[in-house]
Length: 362
Image (spheres, rainbow, N blue to C red):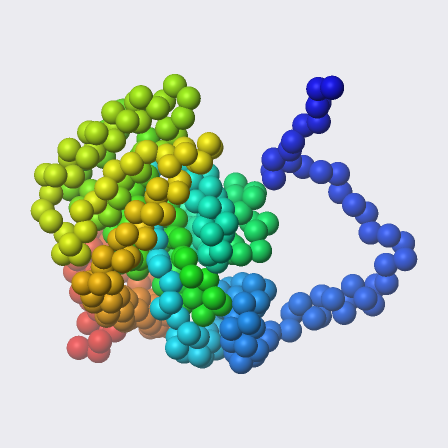
């Protein structure tokens, strides 16, 4: 007999459930009060080290907070987790919107958990420049992976950071590693300069492409191609298999145009289908081969040291910027100079110099 039941997506709207009459108002108040209680930095750290996903989520929310009171507490958690970090492979995945990043990550993540891996996915969702809001839909699209007990998915709004990399993604990696996740996947927005920022915090950089979209030539650009450790042509299924193999050949030729990598690794090209799972296992083998090679020649560890220094400098730049805009005198002078610049009473560059001199009290 034909099955007529219809499978709904995670976006399917179900009828609401009204609260039962026997629900105690005092119980509701007690639950709300409990949820508002902020755990100490030690409680959060202890929970993270026990692989408690709730503690991990609350700690990530803490480090993403712009509240100055939360900063000290967040730093305590990070410092306590740092000795337990650096025991994972960090993978950055990028590609243009529509390439199938979320579908690929779900298939890839399920393959890894089937091998006994613990996978953390940090998905960065683009923020609106108008409302500053974000849908955070990546977790919704990974319906199967989100239910896997060996997986943790954390969507974060990109905010105003370069290219859509969440402001505290670097610190979030440390917390996830301390929680026992041995494979960290960072999904970029896939637009602008996000690839540059993600490349500076991962060990392996994977570029997802699709064939037949007219972007083969667009994809052969020095910036993104030189950063990629592997190029995977996604959606190689059905009538698209031949086109995918052709695109693979074209990108493979393009890779030979670039100089050799300092890692000693030769970037690879392959095809896969996130729907049929064809080629997914090969992607993981490629990453494992890369890890083995770069650890044997010590490039893996040297790169991480350089990344740590880079993020120290980025943190200094970020803090200086924050201090500047939170200065009360600068805030008043900034409003005045904005009006002057808008009315062509002073040039933008002269106004900027005036504000900086005032801030540094020159």
